[in-house]
Every structure is written in C-alpha cells, then in structure tokens.
Length: 179
Image 1 (cartoon, helix red, strand yellow):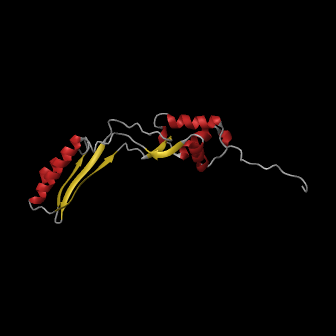
Image 2 (image 1 turned 120 degrees about the vertical axis):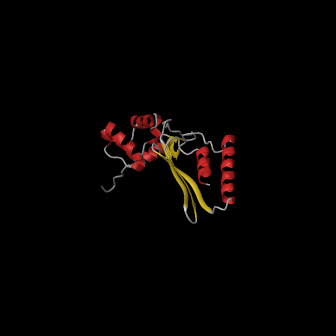
Image 3 (image 1 turned 60 degrees about the vertical axis):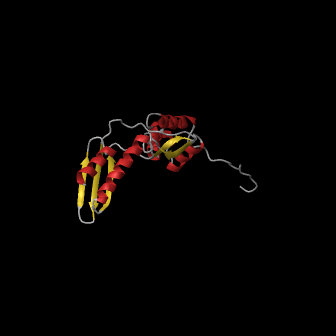
C-alpha cells in the first residue's frame, strides 16, 4: 500500500433514501401521526423496508429534524377556556363562597379538585417546524374528578364525580353543601 493514495470519503452513505423519507412524512401527517414515538417509526420503517437492516433512533430523529423539518413539540387539543369572561365570573363566585366559608369559623386549610381523563394523550408530538400541531381527541371522553376540602381537624367533604367532570358549578355546589 505504500505510495498508493486512498480516496477521501467526505460523507457516510445515507441510511434512508427519498422513499423512506416519504413514508415517514406520510406516517406523521396522517390522523394522529404526530403521536408516533421514534421506536414506532423505526418499527414501521423496518417492517415496510427490511432492506434498511438496522437504524438507530437517533438517526431517525436526525432525519426528521434535518431532512423533513419536523420537530418534537407541545401538542394542543382544545381551546383554553380559563380566560373566557364566563369562566372568570364563575371563578369569582367560587372564591366568594370559599371566603364565606372561611368567615364562618371553619379553619379550612385545603380545598382542591383534581381530574383524571381516561383517554388522555401525550403532551408532545412531531410536527413541521413553524406550524402548530394538534391532536384529534374524542369528544365524548370520560373524565373523573375528585373534589375535597379539609380542616386541621377533619375532612369536611370528598366527592368523586364521574359524569361531565368537575365544572365550576359542581365545585361551587360542593362548597355550599359542606359549608
């Protein structure tokens, strides 16, 4: 090998070709495709294109970001209703009822509500750079809420709500019932 010059290779051969990239783009753009994990995308690629052999999750991520202009970002599902005027009015009403309960010598130290969704979805998914990504969710999802109030002496009230979730009106009703 002395005296022989080897060609300098500037770039490693590409793991994914245009057909593979189109398949990834198709998967991510259909329905709730933004929810695919890198492992799921890898499995799809290897199932449909066994000639790839093996490919790392990092390589797939790099292709999504650099070749297809996808990023992993926060998903949106619904309009945020916390700042609607009607919501603000209900929040003030509930606050006034809580203040009334406190003024009646209850030593309430904790009042809260927490919710559980049976058909929850991940918070992040794949989407095109510069575009908002949303996920389709079922309209008739089943929610559970747990509402409770405690003092330094006792549990004033605890309720599990299985229909309609915990709206401000229901929370207000629990405050009225227990105070």
